[in-house]
Length: 154
Picture 1 (tube, rainbow, N blue to C red):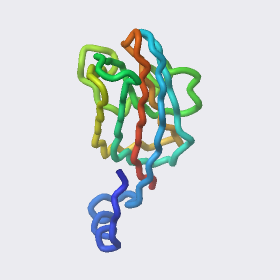
Picture 2: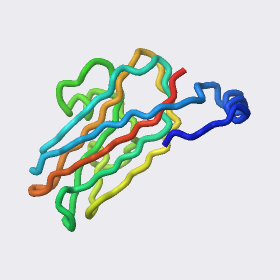
Picture 3: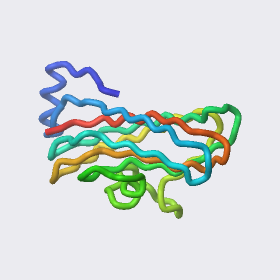
């Protein structure tokens, strides 16, 4: 998550990478109901004009253990307030790289899983929000997710 940076490290870091050296973390929690196609989404408050997305962590768990689970998931950035998960999936700019044949990143697992994406991705232009969305594949198991987005403004 957020790293402690000493003053000498901050100076070296700011010379090598001209951006803010202090980062902050936004956490968003999703509770996706059981049922194929059930979804949930959350979004952050507005962040700055020039934002470095440093990393994204997802912790996903089913409420019943020992079952095979699966879902679509996406972290995106955009303007305005999304009214449903479709805006985050389809209209906003995705942050997580995806190279598969499915339209969005997909994951299958048993019990709990942690996903870490090291980004170092610069977003410029308008003030934006971060949004996350998940869509359940399980007919009987509710999913919970905690998502942490580490970013630096400036």
